[in-house]
Amino acid sequence: MQKLNYFFMGLITAVFFSSFIYFEYFDLTNKFVNSIFGLIALYLFLHVEKKAVLVAGFFVGIFWFYWVGYSFKYTGVGYLTPFVTVGFGLVYMLFFGVLALFEKPFYRAIALFALNFVDVFYFNWLQIQAIFTDSYFGLQTYQLAIMLLVLALPLKKLKFIPLLALIFTLNFQTPQQNNMPLKIKLVQTDIKQDKKWTAQELPKIIQIGYTEINKAIKNGYDVVVFPESFYPFYMNKHPQFLQKLLELSKDITIITGSLYSEKNNHYNVTYILKDGDFSIAKKFVLVPFGEYVPLPKFAQEWVNETFFAGEADFKPADKPTDFYIKGIKFRNAICYEATSKKIYEGDVKFVIAMSNNAWFAPSIEPTLQQILMKYYGRKYKVTIYHSANYKFSKIVFWFFLSFL
Image (cartoon, one colour):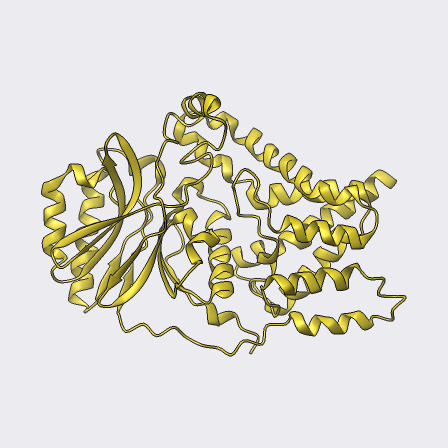
């Protein structure tokens, strides 16, 4: 019975900690419910017995990241998918297992606060504060510290007085909107990943591009944004096609994902075509175990060839890329980058992001990505224009989520 008890408590903890993702996925998001469930999740992590913490960590890994292995089938090792899923469960069991080293809630609170700054294998999609993205609570670091301290205190003995301190964790920001004088069209496509890179699909993709550009011009848009790697080839190796887009760019700024080859290096890039000329924005933050292998050099080549068909060998840019359209500055973000704090550092008000989420269809991956973009948009007061293949092409305004 005791074993069932700690298993049940661990599972319940993981459910509360993950619920906001599935509420969003099923279009059931409620700020009040997310606020309460988030507090319960943190409280349970601080107070359940040690074995329950391990169970909770395992199921958090599954609930958040069961989809990661879905992409493996496109590199010929789809049989690894269930092992990857279980692997994420075990990794996050160890991640949250740090809390199980401590009996007292106060020390667990310190450990949980510290975990908020740790990325496992440079993969940063588990952001503890992200559970409050669509809630009444703020997302600043000090607010998490107050919250954990309050939840770690013996509330019954103190007659719940510490709960009053939660007032300082509420989000009282005044709603604002970053002014945007440009009319931007975000293109959403639904091209299956197993077809995207085939010769048969390429003419259809090119025609979709022409159709969307011409429609955008006709409807008076200033900018049209396509998803990540919308054109699935090295565009700089096809000068005739590039020239056709440059002609169209005299009437509208075209921002699209494609590939770029330079000195035997491969880059996942954004092409910015305007006024008959173009520039590129190379990806700055690569996907670990997707676009590069974050292991010692002696192991990189073997892992890349064995599990990723040699495709995890992209090169990153040295820094984020900013570009201007009619005097307005934008920060470039390609898929995973849009969920990295490195993109939002500095003087950033507008981000143009593009993704290809078909790698993980169908799953909660696009939903979690969208939540994380909201999280960073709120935290850094940035407006994000996101174009995606599969899901979701939309504008993420940071101010939509304020308490008022």
